[in-house]
Amino acid sequence: MSEPSGTATPADHPVSRLMPMGRWALVIGLIALVLVGFLASLLHGPDGFGLPEGEDAVRLVLLEIRLPRAVLGILVGGALGLSGAALQGYLRNPLAEPGLLGMAGGASLGAVIAIHTGAAGLFSLALPLGGLAGAGLAALAVVLLAGRGSGSVTLILAGVAMSSVAGALTSLVLNLAPNPFASVEMIYWMMGSLNDRSLLHVWIAAPLIVVGAAVLMSTRRALDALSLGEMAARNLGVDPRALRQRIVFGAALAVGAATSVTGAIGFVGLVVPHLLRPFVAHEPGRLLVPSFLGGAALILFADVGLRLLSPAGDLKLGVVTALIGAPFFLWLVLASRREWSA
Amino acid sequence: MTLAGHDLQVTLGSRHVLYGADVSAEPGELIAIIGPNGAGKSTLLKALAGVLPLEHGRVTLAGRDIAGMEGRERGRWIAFLPQERVVHWPLPVRRVVMLGRLPHNPSPNDAEAVGAALKAMDLEALADRPCDALSGGELARVLLARALAQEAQVLIADEPTAGLDMGHVLALFRHLEALARQGRTVLVAVHDVSLALRHCHKTVLLKDGKVLAAGPSRDVVTRAHLAGAFGVDCEIATLDHVPIVLPKTTLT
Image 1 (cartoon, each protein chain N blue to C red):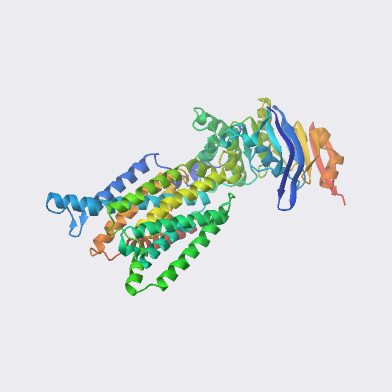
Image 2: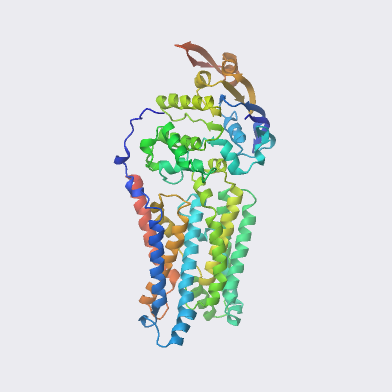
């Protein structure tokens, strides 16, 4: 069709709101943000920013206390942001979030059981290991429930069912708690926190999150193709069944490991991809790396912020992210509604 | 490179959507698939494109079963435009067309292929516009440009003319004819049977999942066949060398 169609020129359309930044500008900016958050997290202690006196003390405090906290902040925030972006791309729904497939619920249940049985009191790793077992079982159940097909609706239904079951069982365990202290411990754990995590926690979570993130990253082209619907994606070489397996496996590893070491941290996986999408021209594949970095930065800053607000450490990270996230999400909904009605 | 479907059968639920259909398409041919609603046109095209599992039968390209091909290789041979016209995110037009290069990626002539596809579909002025700021007909051309950018030997398009204004319908068929002249194989499902008669070398007439007639368009698009398939009495005439099919009354 060579003749001009006489349609409007791009100038009179709101292109600018979607104009992507330079390919690397966004990623570099986010990396810088993560670095700043990382340093702030390392340098902040009970007495404000700074380092303790004495070489041994510096080594001990930095390596054993602050480094695990900062590294876990990056890993957990990244896992949640990336999983959220991948799930939103896969389900083609901006409301998808990492907890949707039931792994976070499974991890919480596993950890709560570890507290209830007293295993957590016997050795400190019982909590994360219980969480991992719960997340793994939840992922397995979701895969079995969703069946061998390739549909995303069955996957959501299976995930929602699994989340409900895990939630109900978690309530049951809380209900049957042997004493009030155990209930409080469970509730605090479920609120999500980076307090008092050790390098051991990092060693447990890091490999799983790295593998999960790599698996999710491998879906980027398939997610792009899926923007055109399943039939067009198949024509472009996407195997929907293999894609679904990779999404579930990657998200199970990343979200399961993250939730197992920190407890449930809400809204990061929902809000971060949403926030960054316009900067990558809404391309689901290109959204993955920025969402990892954005999630990491958000968790780091939220964690430093809550330590500034309550140095005693009684404010929980999951509570803060929800407090920031929920109004922000509300604002997003209102903003998009204005855009549609305009 | 001959694309051939042998004894294709597809069942959805308890309904035989395709029931033993045989189709063959040669290089250089522009073929129309026509038939009443629910005849199995879309299913036939999906089966020929290899995006739908078959119950029975097979589709071969130059003698090779396409079910055995790796997905991206199949995408380099066969481009398929589905009937569903969705772009789930407000992607810029150029990025949507670029998706057609996924089976090739990365290839040195990606940019060239995308540029040619944009030009062919008259989209150069819209290249940076987000897809949610397009009209239905513009979106249809964007999605067709995606399939063109695939630069496949075989192009299968399910109702590419739906929603297009008459100027763009004419231009579209000029382009499809040019592709056929280059030696590509082009199959299109159309509702307007005049288009089959006017532009397509061959026509396949489907009804109830079976091939009712197939062959040169003027042998297939006949009063008797249209009456049998659509239940409509049609007048077929020629005006200034342009064939016209005029539906007159429904037969009961």
